[in-house]
Length: 167
Image (cartoon, rainbow, N blue to C red; front, top):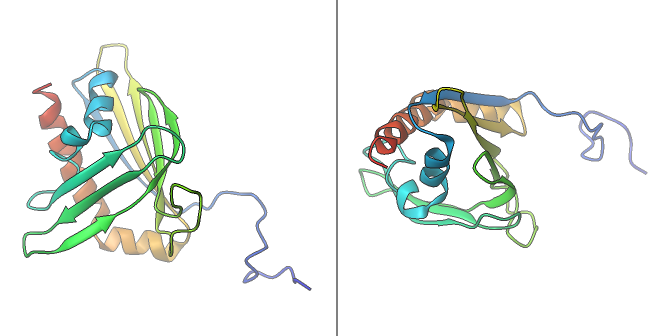
């Protein structure tokens, strides 16, 4: 019989963990342009990874259960496939993805995070961009910080800002 202890995986009170990292930017572009840059694979490939890293093979299927996949390439020949699934789509406003599940809703190995990006239109035509990485534990949050969340996601957001000036 299951016991109600802290290490029991069935002990889920329904409250969210507070293991999130957040990046905010305000872009000089309307929300529809920011949405395009995030959801059109060829545009995503131009900014989504901090240089000198790049991404290829981006797949963005905008429906719950759709794929959000890409492959990261490092300057020393590193190749890191990233597979995710779309959880939520609010067209032009919010996209939530995770690496915890496959498109057929099966567990996908060790989950790292749930990512949400929000494009909030501002009255002056600019867009507030909020990218949130929610982790299952303090340890995975710390791992993401050690990997350079602030610097990496910040550099990618700066690259997004540059791309938006060309759209």
